[in-house]
Length: 295
View 1 (cartoon, rainbow, N blue to C red):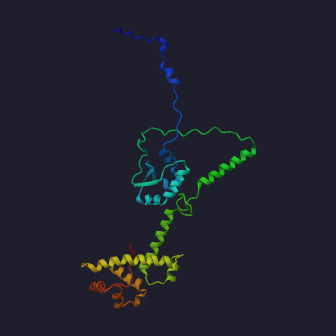
View 2 (view 1 turned 90 degrees about the vertical axis):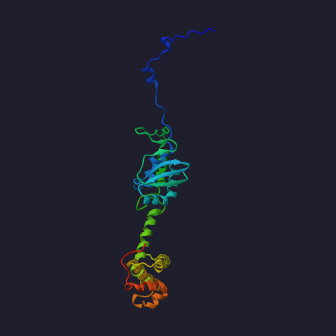
View 3 (view 1 turned 60 degrees about the vertical axis):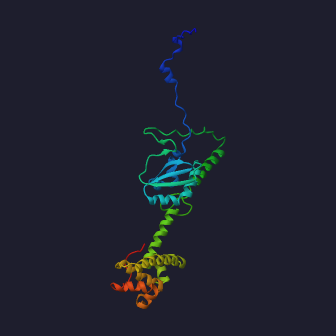
């Protein structure tokens, strides 16, 4: 078998390395990965204060994993989930249908299936803006300016007066929930400490209180206190001061009587003979409630 002699590479086929390098240009920046776009838009989506305590980590199967500094921030963002998903769509990030949260130290962002971003590796450049086309006349230029101003104002949306997060009302859902919890706690403290006060007296201490709200808090307290008292009735250990305070407040709140109207017969009728007997075994039951809130 005849072998063809190897072809000799002539000097004319070789190109200097300097010429090859000078002719190379980096590729044009393409669109951002979805997780990178979310990270860049995150402060605008949730507000600067919330963004300091949270960070998008991973996007996979339409679920966005968000790291938060604590479970409290996870709960706040859970309340904000509908607004965050809406803001993501308005920011051009489509396909995110659910948020999932993980509390702990904020970590480096990584894209789904690609691992963490390598140190020193820059993000892909944003797509270049389309070339600007001058307005044909002054009226058109003013109309465009007004349109851009209106679009910017509409995109900004409303912000919570307390935390600056996106909100459809004066306060966002987490802040409203925090205010409602604080209000309920204050009302529970009053019912525990001075359970004999009537509605008018309580309404003067809790602005905007209505009878439905009072009755809901009252029922919740009585249910929790009764579970404690049932355990007291079944137990043989000594009764604590806290349990005696609960029993005292329970009798007053359930009966609706003033402290000087409470008699052993009333206590036995409200608590039952077994629990009343257990309370009678130790030091005398305190009628004034202790200065603590039963949670």
